[in-house]
Length: 290
Length: 259
Image 1 (cartoon, rainbow over the protein chains, first blue to last red):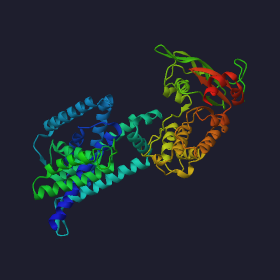
Image 2 (cartoon, chains in turn purple, green):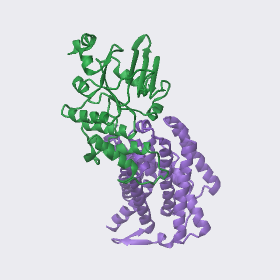
Image 3 (cartoon, rainbow over the protein chains, first blue to last red):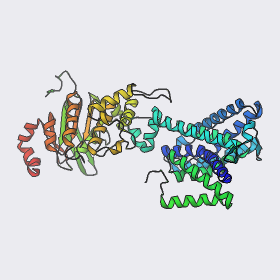
Image 4 (tube, one colour):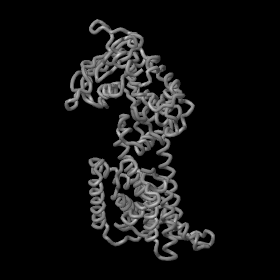
C-alpha cells in the first residue's frame, strides 16, 4: 500500500514537471502551429538561473528559494520572448524552417550551457524541508514532490484564468480556433504570439528550478530529457489543449513510475501508450479531430 | 428614397461604383457596372446564379481587383486598397459561409471584435467585466440582433439562423458605415427567415447603409429601397422594387425565366 502511495505521489510530482513544459508546447503549437524544440533550453536556463541565485545568496532560506523560482520563471520568459521575436517571428507558416531553427537553437544553447557551467551535473541545495520527507499513509514522500504538484496546479489555474478572463486570453483562444479569422478582424496576433511564448517560457523556467530540486541536480541536459516526455504528453493530450496536457502529464508520469518500479520498463510503456493513442485517437485525448 | 444627382446633391454617396469591370482570361465576368448608394439606403442585389452578384461584392470589398472602373467609399477612391484598409474605412462584410468562432461563447465572439475596434488596452492582464466598454458595446449589438438572452452559449451550438445574427452582431461591433450581406438567408431554416429579416430591417432603420445579395426574392423585395438586377455580369436594372418588377426587360431576362 505505502509503495503504491509513494509511486502515485512521486508520479504526480513528475507529471507536474512534464506539465510545466508541455503547457507551453501545447499553447505555442495551438496558436501558432510551431513545434518548439528549443523549449527544453528555456527550462535549462531557468534552472541554472535559479541555481546561480541560490549559490550566490544562500541556498537554505525559503526567501532565497522563492526568489530563485521567480528569477527562473523570469529568465525562461525573457529567453522565450526573445526567441519568438528574433527567430520564430520570421518563419511563421514555414514549418520545416521552424523545426530547423528551434532544433539548432536547442543544440547551440546546450553547448553554450556546457561551456558556461560545465557538462557535469551540479548538485543543488535548497531549504532543508525540501530534502526531507512527509509520511502519507505510511509512505515517506520527498517534500519537493508536493512543491512541484502545487506549482503545476497554480500554473494550470493561472493560465486557464488568463485565457478565460483577459483580453489577450480571448485573442489567444480565438487564434487557436482560427488564426486567419482573427487577423481578418484587424487584430495584430503577433503580440499574442510573443506573449504565449513568454508564458510558456515562464512555466518552463519555473519547471527548471523545480526539476533541479526533484532530481537533485542541474545539468545542461535537464531540459532535453524532460522535453522528450513533454512532447509525448502534448501529443497524447491533444496538441493545443491545455487541459489535455494536464491530464496526459499525470497519466504518462504515473504510468511511467509504476512500470519502472515493477518491471523497469517505464520509458517503453510511455512510448507504447503514445503509439496506442495515435492509433485509437490520432488527435489526442482532448484534441480536436482534424 | 433619397435621390442623388451628381454634382448638385450636397451629400456624397456612401458607396459609388463606376464602370466596374472584371475580365479573367478572355471571359468578361463583370461588365461596366455603375451604381450609387446613398447614406442610409438599403439595396438588394438579385440575379440568377452566375450573374455576378458575389463578384460585385468581392470587387467592392477588395477581395478581387477590378480590371476596369472605380470603387468609392464616401467619396474616397478605394479601388487600389486591400481588404483590411477598406474595412478600416468603414466597409463591413459577412460571407456566404458562417464565420464565427464555434468554441467561444456568443458574447466573446462579439467582444473580440468590439475590443479590437475600441483600441487595445495596454495591460496584458486587463480583465474585461460586464461593465467595461467593449462588453457593453457587445451586449448592445447582441440585443440589436436579438441574441441578448444567449450570451453564454457556445457559438457552435447556435442554429444557422442565430449564427447569421451573431455574424451581423460581430460586424456591427466593428462599426461599419457600409454593410455588405452576402446571402444572409443561405442555409437558414424557413422558420428562422422572418426573425432574420427583422434583424436586417432594424439595421436599415438604424440608419446604416446596407447592400444585400439574396436569392429569396420575397425577402429582398419587402426589405429594400432599391433593387439592382444583375444578369450575365451586367447591371440590368437599378430601381425601386415596384419599378423593377414592372420592367419588361427584367421580366423577360430574369424574372420571366425563373418565376
